[in-house]
Length: 231
Image 1 (cartoon, helix red, strand yellow):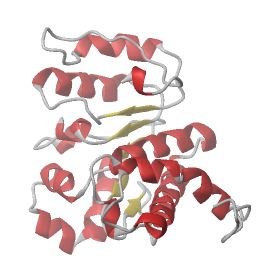
Image 2 (spheres, helix red, strand yellow):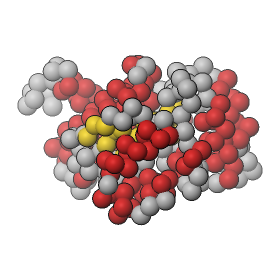
Image 3 (cartoon, rainbow, N blue to C red):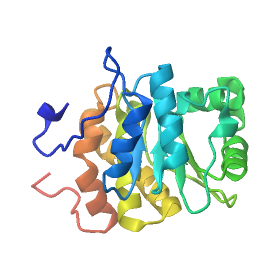
Image 4 (spheres, one colour):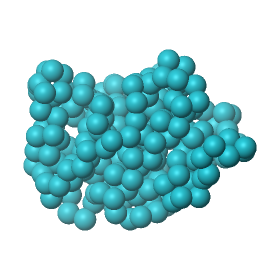
């Protein structure tokens, strides 16, 4: 992965013979000075990886964002996925992952998105980003926001990983998990909308969303001129 971008910085972790991260890797992660941790995308859904995620959640002293296989580590045992005093936990499930967490069908989740997101957030002391059409961001205090940006072309592999990174990045800057999650979700959808305006929904890839994050931020702060010759 590090060969894909010169700006990537990597940290070697303990792994099993088949290349899966193991629980002892938590020590190296926690020893590294970080303002926020994001975990899950590409991790793998194995007993070793699940043990790593659970140990990381229980021991972290900084905010943590859980997505993808980090959420699958708690499927059927969501009682263990709970925030601790002073430690912000953000989860970013799509409807299928949410269904596995709460023991319902995807149809049930989709039919009661707002209620399920808000109830999970308050009972588990976590910030819930329930992805999908009109992504919901629910906070432990029961406040929920519904996002209006984004389009169907973003329902493709990797776009959720981009969002996870954005949430972590904004937490590191704002030091406020609720505001960071809402801002990241909005900008993620706006970047997707800017990309869709150029290439349509059918051709949209996660990398296109990523490449439009800068213009999305400039749009938000009023610095980008629509229709300029530079676009």
